Image (cartoon, rainbow, N blue to C red; front, top):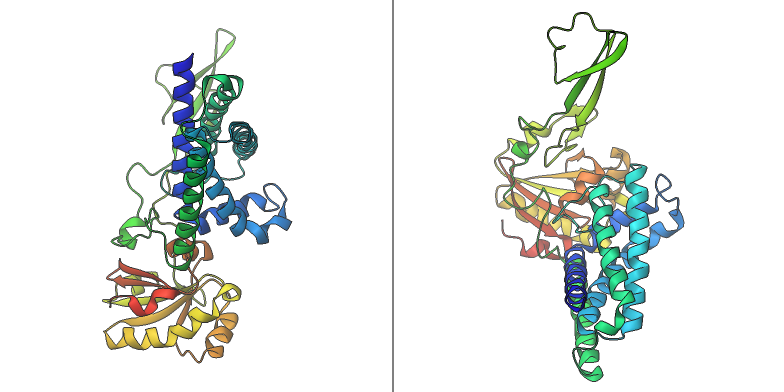
Length: 363
């Protein structure tokens, strides 16, 4: 039994640390997922939506620290109760999300390892079983170091997590797991592959010797059964969406996506919400646009708001830049900053920048 407890302790501890660090690499992305959970369509906790980012930062740091505390055997009762309550909450959340089909990606491991809600639910069930074992068999695991040593390790861990969280919020994630990472050919990433289509099954109903019989095929009715009574179609497997979908560049209902992607060198200023555009970043846009044009780039603004609101924002900062409309989800997925910059050469992403780093972006 002791070896089982040791395995559970290491497995749970390492998984919590890994899960926390992956999300800490991109806390804004995790906050978007919390915002989705808090929405009226899911949990109906809209009053928590303004606090999605601070909650996201607290949760991911707490997740890492709990994993370290478990491995150290530090503050055992607090650690195991915290783990148990946290996993119970997330098990409920992932079950609710999966059963009612509310959220398509749980966000448990950020964009690094996308999981469906059902996959996440069963992952949480396994963790719950392991944590219950650790809870029941607390006498079989203890402290790895003296209390003072463990306290210092926890303090250092917390400080490092805070520094990492601050850095990625002020710049960009250290590791980019998203579809819009540098080197991506957007046009290629938007195309469906041969296996990215819905797979259907056809249930053919026959009456044979007075008994209803169902024969299933993947297309035409089966041979040798004569006339069928009815046929029902069901989806066996839904199509896997392309890596990039719902990305379009439009103006007054006209699509300019291909035209922009075909251009030699383009610098796109991304603003997913004019109300959330940072003043410090908007003040830098003019200088960046001038520098980009000097280096042979055509500069455009992509925004999710209506053109009148976008024009008001640009006029407020004396910016005379052509703007187009793009889906807000795609914009905030592409670069975790508003405003932000994404550089393209013939549709291939060659650079991205948080507004804090506009002046350091190589052109």
